[in-house]
Image 1 (cartoon, rainbow, N blue to C red):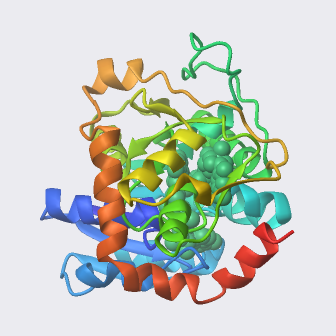
Image 2: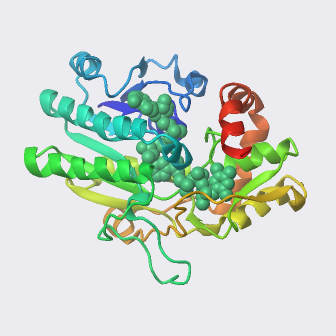
Amino acid sequence: MTIIVTGGAGFIGSNFIFYMLKKHNNYRIICLDKLTYAGNLSTLASVMDNSNFRFVKEDICNREAVYKLFEEEKPDVVINFAAESHVDRSIENPSIFLQTNIMGTAVLMDACRKYGITRYHQVSTDEVYGDLPLDRPDLFFTENTPIHTSSPYSSSKAGADLLVLAYYRTYGLPVTISRCSNNYGPYHFPEKLIPLMIINALSDKSLPVYGKGVNVRDWLYVEDHCKAIDMIVHKGKVGEVYNVGGHNEMRNIDIVKMICKILNKPESLITYVTDRKGHDMRYAIDPTKINDELGWFPETKFVDGIQKTVQWYLDNRSWWETIINGEYQNYYKKMYNR
Ligand code: NAD
Ligand code: TYD
């Protein structure tokens, strides 16, 4: 089987490539990635010499280049991780989100139609459902929850999801969609909550918690997400959406305190800063469908996953130091010094 994985130089895509090359040693994996600020070729260093792997630096919006790659590689499956993925950046500059997340998805699916594939899988997010109130712990996102987005990021992901389902209905393209909750683990870009707090705490810098820190996210260890996508691609029903999550809801402030504890840093580093505009209160996935239909269940408990993740950042300083010493400095100043 030949699989094109887009966005494979980013956080989840790279973890997925490692998972797939290990699990299916007869699969050929082609990573198509533009290497934006969030893509890092050094992340893929350990697989660059693997004869089942090829890296192609390209934009998913570049129709000509995408078609050329399909002609060369004749993929069976395409899994689209490529996206602009950070909510705060989408609030600053929405247009690149529309371009990559919606137009890029259209280009990939057009290529799938033209050259023929057995599956197009769209890696989406629970953020397309909007948010849930804090005082209704009985409510969860199911696959039937209406799309109701808050940020330009989630709106662009929702737009892409609708387009994917339209290509299924209109052209019969064999698609699936996964909508996962917040991931954490190795190679997570330092602009996101968990790596940002680990890295700041390690240098005794302040830990910027938005608002009161009571917003809730439903955290899943990245390898569990990779396993779910592998299962959906192999056993999932065409035209279906699968929610992915493991009932692990936590308040931001409790995560930050946990990181302080693991690293033996004082909670006095915590600083409450101006809240994110339109900040979603609570995300919570109901994973009944993927549990029942595909037999997927998460394996890593949060207490273990967060320890492993902190240890990874301790063991891989050069990976994140290179990032935070570059363009990231300007981003950080712009976002946090105002
Ligand atoms: P990321 O920002 O770490 O990585 C995105 C990757 O896509 C980077 O390697 C980047 O270079 C590449 N890319 C961006 N624009 C591109 C373009 N135009 N052409 C080709 N490549 C391009 O993101 P992530 O956290 O790994 O998320 C991957 C996917 O999973 C996204 O679609 C995201 O919406 C979705 N998702 C993420 C989470 C999460 O918690 N991080 C949860 C659910 C779903
Ligand atoms: P983030 O990692 O950006 O993921 P998402 O917004 O897609 O859920 O943020 C997770 C939560 O942490 C979210 O409620 C915003 C909050 N947050 C902070 O409090 N401080 C920060 O510096 C960041 C980046 C996020």
